[in-house]
Structure formats: C-alpha cells, structure tokens
Image (cartoon, rainbow, N blue to C red):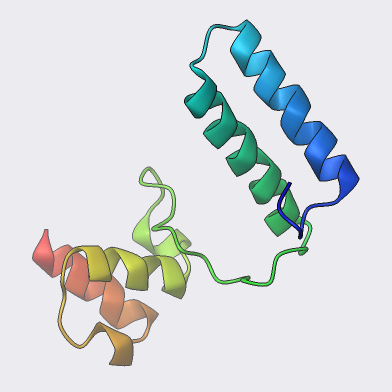
Length: 99
C-alpha cells in the first residue's frame, strides 16, 4: 500500500482489483485500473499533493472548455514552441493552427 493511501483506499483498491480479476482481466491490468480509480478519487477529494492536471482533457470536449493546464499539455504533445508564455486563448489558437 502506498504510504499516502488510507486503509479505506486500500480496501477500495482490493475490492476493485478482485472484481476486475473475477471479470477475467489480467492481474497487471486489474492492478493498474484499480490504482488509477483510487488515485482519481483521492485527487477529486483533494487528498493528493499535485493538484495540477497532467492530462490533456477530454478529447470530445471543445478546446474552450479545457483548462489552461490541459491545453498546455496538449501543446507540449504537439511540440508547439513558446507555449509556456501563452495564455489560454493563445494556446487554443496555436493548437488549432497546428492541426
């Protein structure tokens, strides 16, 4: 159990992992999915030290609906230059120009 996890988190992890194993998922995949679910819940509750997103947002969501951090991460994936100095609107324009 990671030291940041509570006993409740560990129980939730075990229940999810066991459920996935019962459904026929491979053990490594079940462990990863269970850990991601528990960590997502911890993040949602504000119990994680890193509150900034590391993702690029929902790909089905308009760029305007994403956060600046999500847009920055997408610009990083696209290797857009000078992205760190751009605001949200500039990031949106640069991402659209790149596509």
